[in-house]
Length: 393
Image (cartoon, rainbow, N blue to C red):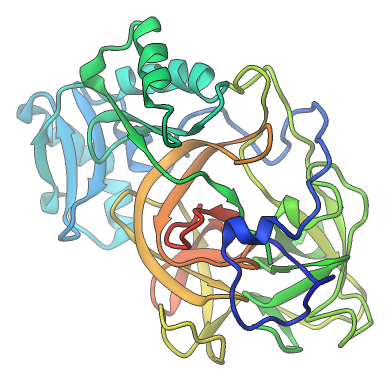
């Protein structure tokens, strides 16, 4: 979802994801090496409610329902007390009391779903037409997304693996593509602004300091070579407008295969992220994200800012936000978490990603994703979405 600047520099009309890919070069093939940004191969981060409660007998998933109520699947409602106890840290972080949780009867426990998820992911995502595989906490099932015409093949693979058919949902869905391309010079530099690297536009995710080095985070595919550090230069907003570089890529882990559940014939990472060091003298503000005049209205006019106060994990059914140079501030619900996601037109699988039902456009790649209203919780950075521009990853 980066945008080429060879054909246009500041196009106001967003080229959505599939269209954005048509004017970009294919990313160079990443090489085999472990992802240094990944510290664990667990399906869920340690602070995620599904990781906290996976040891509760008969626990089958946690999510927020359509009314925003915290909900757990349990095979036995008598385990409610145990579920409340282990989920207490998550509830405190969300400002909720454990008694607010509602219980639904689950057919499968989370340990089973994780095992079937791993089996299905390794096989299904190695086939053409596969889009994602998810242990779906909101349905207490393994959910598999495929392109049109590929459902039969996916069901056959599931059957061959011995996974019960009633434990799996196979659905047709749009392919996921890279998110290719606010647009003026802004100092100090904050998250959500347009950045330019040779030939393309993306969005700056957030500022950071690593071992004393002032830095910012954006996508790996918003570098000259996706996966691998080669010193990509960055300007803000454009090299033609502000020819002095704001930073240089310094850390971009290469992709791996044949480990951590990476499907056969695919190359994988747990993130589409890279780090750039700020050039000496570049003004930036830690923890600050640009805020535009309203959400879901297409505005890219900055009027305030968001302040990152902590980082965390998203839960299904939670409302989250992103700010990007093309579609501005969009907001929607998390639909799936920790989804193994195939990238259309490539051999890349991004492991354990989050799907959000919210607007996105070409050039939004790298956008900060967060929850909250003013003081916010950082959840990650956007790297792709569907061709309709209604879902980001």
